[in-house]
Image 1: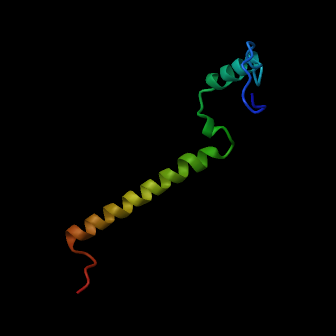
Image 2: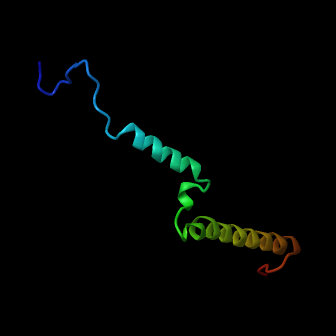
Length: 77
């Protein structure tokens, strides 16, 4: 048998971390109601305010373009 082949021992491999510690961390993260990507101090600015500002400004520009096209404003002669 090759030394690199997995041995078929009857005992299972020991866990990487204790199960109690994993369950404790799961309980902690599931009890917090904020999403995990909004945990930091300034994360609300980068993940909510910036996309909201981009969406509002793009909607304004599209609306202004539609208004100008429908009224014939800004056409080149």
